[in-house]
Image (cartoon, rainbow, N blue to C red; front, side, top):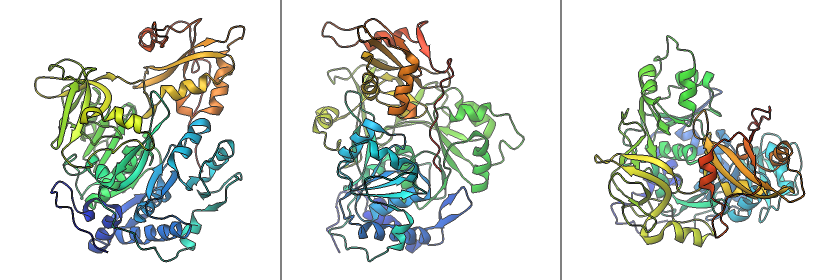
Length: 538
């Protein structure tokens, strides 16, 4: 099969950025080179990766997955997650991952929005499907064991390889601008949105132009989930470089350095409080006995230089989000407190006011971004033309985040213009929190917002007003929410007010609530021993 090559020099050839072509390229040119190392000590060469991916891809094709189809993946990560990711793209189908904490209304929304007919899921999660409308889903493939049945036909992941058949011929070449994935990101004025990402977008996100200091000689630690760009993006860009990954299922302070040493890991991402936890661990004589050369810290805090000095690791930071492609990247070990770095090559950035007019240097404005490479960023939100038009108005992508820039070109994050909440590395939609809270019979209205956490980022707080004549008990509300929401969305603080502050047009004034912070009348679930943790999958 042939196609006319793209003549635009800004668009790399397929073998540089398309998953299928990359797997074939490295398997043919460096078959014995290691691609992945896992916690149990097993590893895959590029030749083995191709064999495993084709095996799973053929099983998916036998179950009706065709080029262009959407396939949902409900896994945290691991070997099966990586194989699912690559096998779906090998067929030219669209990879649609979503959070393993999803349940109830949020789960129903992403299933409906995704248009997926096949779901690859962890067996411990399948029972949640019985509680929601499964939309177009026709079949479930599960990892591990399933503890309950579902209305949908379900079969083990291993059966994909057992039922291997001839791969169908592609209808047309998979091009760099074709949709590679739909990644769900928190909504702020509506439900979560599915970000349309091309192969070229994912490549640009952390490719040689964006992260020139990461090479094919690196082994990058994967300890973030597939449904986050920080997990799936790094899995992809190390494939694009012909490099390798070391796969750690979950971040662990005690296991981090031993794992880095055992796997000869050279690069890592330290999200949220990971660096803080590592620094609080007692010092050891072997703190510098490792091959880790560089790490990204997001957000960048004053602990960065402590990490560099204690562990001998070069620390970088960036500003990025699912929709864009690392427009702001720092130099190693930046000394300016709070900086995200400078604009990288190939990107244009503006800071603007509410009318998209540029603000003077030093003043705060919303960050707008565009790239000079076609398809170098998202190409909209799936089945949401209104949100797409709003985000891309005037030809620039509006991040919703406010920054200031100094005279030397360094950018500093100030605040989120939108009402998303960031807790322990998870982006949380205040809209979705509020939708669940007001479903409680005694709640008349609710406003969810972030308050500073002692360990960094935010804790979730919700201010509520009760239905007249009904008693509103915080602990009963918490028990209700714990059954309806992912653990990370359940509020830590509940504040009961007679009325929520509003504008003349009846909009809740969250900025007033946020400014008041954690008040004396705020009910704290931690203080009352109400603990929630992510469910551990077997």
